[in-house]
Length: 148
Image (tube, rainbow, N blue to C red; front, side):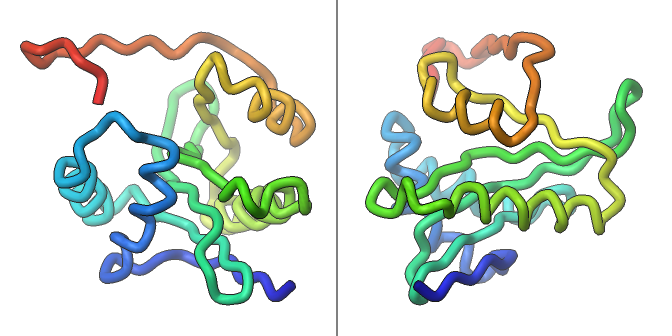
């Protein structure tokens, strides 16, 4: 198995859509594409791709910020490893790469959110040394009040 982990260039950002739709099936495709393009233009965002035999099988966005309580940090977002490749140690390899990557950028911490019902990810993050420090709250301000 030949693996490669790298930053996905802005010009290639839409290659993440097939994986992203497995994670986010509620957002209409055109809106999802627009949002991904807009995100990719932010200077505090980059998307990392995990490739196996040249096929994209994992993604994680990384948001960079500085927080008063921990300093410069990165937040992995929309993390997914394709179901067909799970259980092969790729998630651990992916996060080891991310850890080194953000540390080399001067980050002092990594923070992330996981859906409360995604217990497999909770176990993974615990095993990777993450602790729970709070809850993530969301208030939709759009008139339709829908989450998409």
